[in-house]
Structures are given as structure tokens and as C-alpha cells.
Length: 494
Image (cartoon, rainbow, N blue to C red; front, side, top):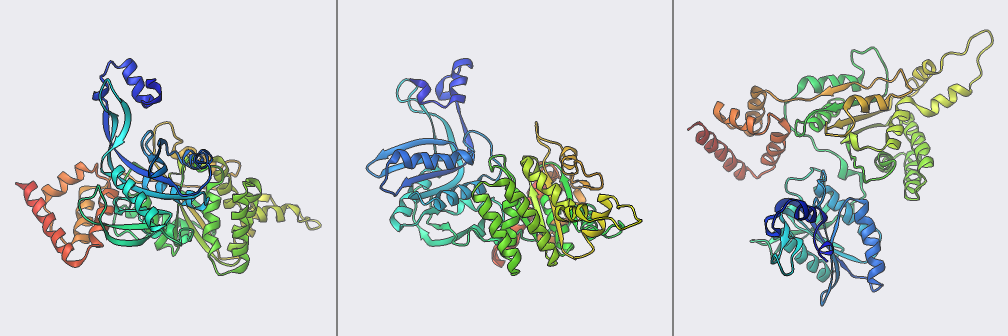
């Protein structure tokens, strides 16, 4: 009986660890979803469709409830396995559920949640989640049903999340009293423009950090000083978490006059995940030929015709470069990118269509046919000024491919392709001091800089995110933030 009510990991601890059920608990940062059925079909069939979306996105289904309020399912991202960009993934799950039109009203909230065994040790003992986020998610679900909207979320999804999330939601109502929150909250829903490419455009981050790495990538993107004229480029940027790798890529792309477009890799996104991102970028350009080709690629992806989509997207890139279009894709967590997507990047860098044209061209009389790769080098970049670049952000994690393995995989079978590896490491104390003072205009003493730098592991990304938040405050709030920094500095020095 206990196997039906207790989480498997907890049951294993109970069986082998000798612990009491009431001693097993933890606080985790969860994204909690309450999904209500609004259709009039069979709840069993409805649940099968909902669970298929949840399983595809590594979101475990925790409970299924049928009471006087109807049928609803409870799920949580980050409950069983740690998922990067959990808030981004939560919104992606909502988008997929809404697009399937199976009849849902979703309430979603995020925050620290108690995960563990609830109830008496002898009666009604089960593994469950509880806390403010589940309560808010339940009330937001009821609010969505009342307002007849597909989903409702609060600001907890936007706090501490990716900078691309605000573009995916729109404000539904302000000052809404919600149980589980001490004050009225602003309620958001999925933006009608959730498919627009703008939601993946990365904002400029102000942080004068790792300038040597930024300058190297900029020169590589602009072919400055390397004697090459390649317009198809890739770079692997590696380093520890929160070292500022993505920000280095953003700054380098900006200095090279290219707009960075984000792709977040995940092992659960299936085959050719990068192709969908590339096609979405080109779908909104003004060139009719490129626009139509991008729509064809997306249609092929939706029909799971991956090989055809792979080839059509290579032609799409060639057409875009022929029309002098530029594209820069920041591939975040490239270690989780599927092999088919790696193959696409490899062939995209090599110039597939030009290789076929050269291979089929007859040699002139009396002249030997030039080597295939030499011909590609001369043809691929002489007829157009378009550029495409893949800035691959790599995090060295246990049991995942190394940065060298990723670069070798991209260049496999193409000896002329060169993919440099840039390492972004710890920032020095002086660099941290300069970044904080230049962006907050606060005079920070040495004690504050040394203490906070050590606490953050000398990672620039930790501070750049918070400095960007301070800079977005209202002027009066910025003054209060500056005074708070000064007060903290005095406390540390004392």
C-alpha cells in the first residue's frame, strides 16, 4: 500500500536508511502547476494528453484530484530532478498545453516549497508538496477558470528568471488578492505573441567583464586579423555556472553588429531542436522567399519529418545569406543539444548547397578539378555578405560532454572547420569593484568587495544579473538601493 502513496526516493530511504517518515523533508525551488479540465470529454482521455506534455518536458505529475471543483492535475517542475531554467520550462509547458486545445485552465506559481512526507507517521502518511507556491497556484487556477482564460501566473515566475520571460507574458489584472500572498499581486497570462521571435532576443547586459574573451569572439565574428573571410562561424564558450558566459556572448555579438537570439537546449526537447529556433528567427524577416521557406521548415517539424526539415533548413540558411541577412544564435547548454542538431550546425557551417553545386560542376578541359573543400571556401562567401554564427555556451557538468568534445563533434569529418574554445573563468576583485561602482555609482570599500566576491565564488554573472535589476528600478528606489549598498559596506567593514 505504501508504494502507491510515497515517492520512490523517499520509500528507498525509509527501507534502507532507517529514518522515520517525519524526518524526511526538504525545501526546493519549484514551479507548481494546477491544471483544471474545462472540456466536457472523458477525464481519462484528457489526462492522457496532459500527461504526455508533462512527460515530454520532464515535469512529474504529482496528484490527480476530482472533487466539487472539478477535475484537475497537480504537477511541479524541479520536484524530482533538477531542471535548468525551470521557470522558462514552466511557461513552455503552459504554451504547449494551450496550443493543443484540450481544454485547460492553468494556475502557476514558483518559490521555495516544502517537499516531504506529510501527515501522521501511522495514519495518512504520504509524500507531498506544500507551502505558499502550491496555494497560490491553486487560487490562480480558480481565477483563470473564473475569468475564462487559459492560464494565470503571478510575479513569482518573473523574479530571478531569464530576461526573455517578460516578453512571453502580458498583464491581465493588477492588485488581485490571492490566498498564499500577503499582498495583492499582479496576474499575468500567456502573451498572444508567444510565438514571436522577440521573446528569445537577449537584452544588452552592462558589465565590463572578461573583455579579452569578448574581443577575441568579436574579432572571430568579424574576421578581423585572422586573414579569413568566413561568414559561417561557431565558438564554444565554457566556464563554471554564473561566470558570465552568456553575457560574454551577448556583448561580442553586439560589438559585431549582430542581434543575439537565444536557444535553450534540453535533452527532453527531442530531435532537431535547434532547427525550430533557426526557422522561428527567419520566419519574421521581410524577405518573402526566406519567410516562406521558414514556414515550410516549421510545418515539417510539426509533422515530425526531421530529415526533410534538416535539409530544408540548410537551404533556408543559404537563401538568407544570399539576401545578405545576418543571424547569431546563442546556444545555451550546448552539452544537452541532440546529435541531429549538432549535425545541422556542422553542415550549416560547411555550406551544404554550395558543396553539391561544386561536386556536380564538370572540370574545365586541361585543368584538374579543384579540391572540394577549397572550392567551398571560395564559393560559400564570395557571392554574399550574409553571416551566420553559433555561439555555444557550455557548462562543465558531471557525465556530460566536455567543451573539447563538443567542438570536435561540430567539426567532425570537416578538417577545414575551426571552432575555437573560449574559457570564461573567475573575475578578479578589481574587476568586480569596477563593475559594481560603474553601474551602481556607489563607492564600495574593500571589505565589501572581498567579502561579497568570495561569497559569489568570484562569478561575474551573479552580480551582473543583480546590477541589471538595480538599474531597472525607479530613480527613487535606485537611491534607496545605493544607500543600502553603502550601509552593507559599512556593516561589513565594522
